[in-house]
Image (tube, rainbow, N blue to C red; front, side, top):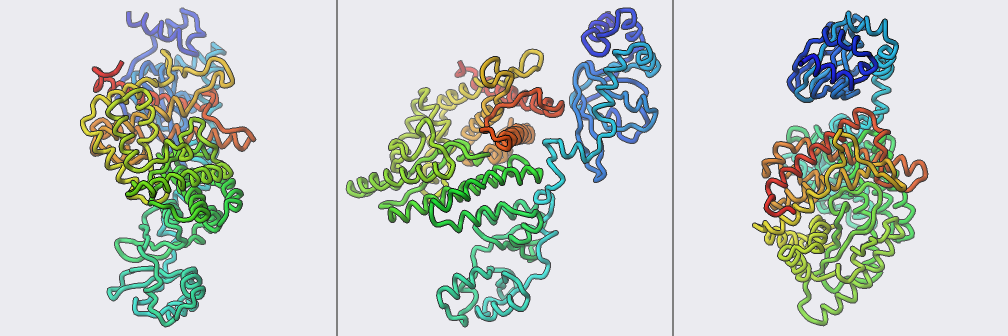
Length: 633
């Protein structure tokens, strides 16, 4: 009975399916079986050669090689019906790769005498085994794999692999708080440096003065150079740790609009990192785009600069950046662009009659933009204390939002087709009206209300009075407590979008139309993960809006996320990076970027990884169904 079972299995598996029953029976008689638990190292690189060909009956393995730098580089995943171990068996040398069980795995083991006989006597077997084992991997250098893999990008990834302490200036020049501006300037000239640290009586850094401060705060204003230097120093003092990667410094420089940042090591002052240091490291820098944006004072000036922002994606992909790092940088640059547009609009119209904030939602609200997407924005303004002020606010923000929308369009952000923009009167309202919106959506979860919740509950303040946005966030947290009915409706929407995997673990693709045989990475991959994590975040009152930040915040607050946090982050990062690579290639080819990819273009590693991501989505959706089983249709 067992032999019949093995025979039926081999008849479905290449190259054994090419053999007749008599030869197959001989093969079965020479098989043994072995079980490997998840994580078991089956074959190890540089260990003695394998003496069997292993055929995976159930489970799967990961194939990797160690680079010259000692890094394990994954080159393939193999699953049910695949074979491994042939290379070392044929070469009779040391094992060329490390093979680890990624699941509990059962293998049939075919001894080398039988393997040799099959290769000698059956050309189809020989051709298949050579193709699947030798042609793909023998003589592939680490550099070639490195350059072709989505996981590693190119070797030029210094921004994400160089520690800040390795390039920060080691000699730190300081002056005491009691020093004059002139004394500080003399020290900067003496040491030929562009910044100087101000230290207190305990020699701890309290501020920084740069050459720009001397130009703008002293020379331009005719200030007395005998004044204390502490009067012009920058506070708060923005710091990074010497153990952080340079990417973190870039992010803080863009966020705080600075070109010098203090480096701390073990609690003590270590050095100063400059924009010039980073540009020397990587040849160019996203900081240069931020500087260009900041220097513009008109929409006409912003338009050509904004067109260059997409180039940052190519730079970051070249450096091997993770998807989360790419979207962080693009978010900071796009936020800066939007803020500049709104500043220019304010100057044109004058100060608003009441304080307000400009919010973004959708992918912009979650800080997950890749290339410029539709405008998704709204205005929340302070409740007016008189009818006249309320009327003035309505008139001002109507004109303000129309001008801002047109300017953003000129800068490459097309209008939202569904009208979810501040230029739509419904989405520029006083705080009290927004609170009523949110309360009504939660209290009466109609289909429209759920749609609005999915859109607006990811809001983030981009410009203006942050406290107004925080008041709305506080209101949302309060009205969501114990709202099982609303959360049940949200859960129902979350589990409807099931991953596109067929019965035989094949990808379910578009059957007809423009995108025939393609897979929508956004709708079928990113959106389900966003929806799942959003639901968990709203359940636990998490206030972060980014999917990755939400996962991190839920790690200590949600039992399921605690168990699968790393897998959720990896799945999200992988699908997002796949999408960014695909869109960038489309743009480089002169095509409009979309979210569709043909699975046949993916490597075995990428196919395996995306299947695992879809499996994780299914697992999370099944958990949600179990929790909300009485509410889900």
